[in-house]
Image (cartoon, rainbow, N blue to C red; front, side, top):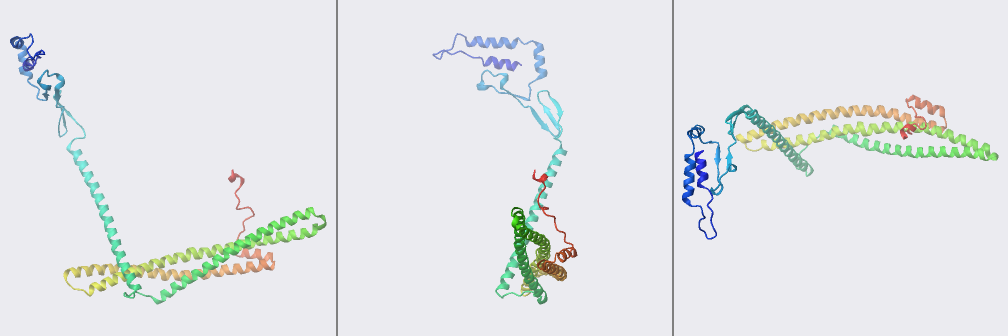
Length: 374
């Protein structure tokens, strides 16, 4: 406290006139006043000063060395320790939650675990891309070698012949499917024309008394043909639907398995050629390690090739049986329905549809109801 008073007294403003001389206040008077202020402290004040002492948590900064005020004091507000918060103003220890060593340890452990997980995923992706690139390179090399006649390939003559027959059969069945759809469209248009023609004849029979009977006969004939045509359309649509399922689902599924088999065959030949090249090379320690790794890859792709080959043989067998069964039924339906329609045998035509469990939709069944139109 004495030091503060002395500092204030020592830094009091001394007025300066325009000529640079001192003012009316003399230097001796200033020193005398400072001495009086110092000796005016009683004994009690001196004891307080000695007890309290200077505050080590505050730093007094006087701007320019003159007139230092309380605004120039900067308090060291916080001094942190592990789990302790020191408040310099009140000289108290305030425990702070969440800043202990357990918190730091858990956060560091979680960050390390997340980093390891991310690193593991990245390494796994890199390894996957590396294996894919190596496999693609070997297969491309084998494919080019086969095309230019430099490499050998594994051939199953019997299986290759069956696969070629299947592909040719699929192309022919696709032609049948395309023509049957065209027949359906043309016949549907003809039935719609007959329906319109029958309505026109019926209307003319009402408006032409002299030709009432003639228009009436033709109207009845067209309506009968239209009804039989709708029955035949039901049979043809069933035929088209069955052929479409056979071609675009059953055969396509077998061809997808064949494609997987051909890819496995290419991979098998690629790794087989790689193993043969390594076996013809030197036999040092590094070469032997590479030969062992190539032998393992060769064995893996050999098992994959043999498994898919077995799957293709089984699927081709079941496909042939299913194709014969389906086509026997559909060809019989198509023949009986067409024959009955053009023979004008309505009873036989309806019996054919009952034989194959074909249910015709009533007229207007495909149109939405008035509730759905709202």
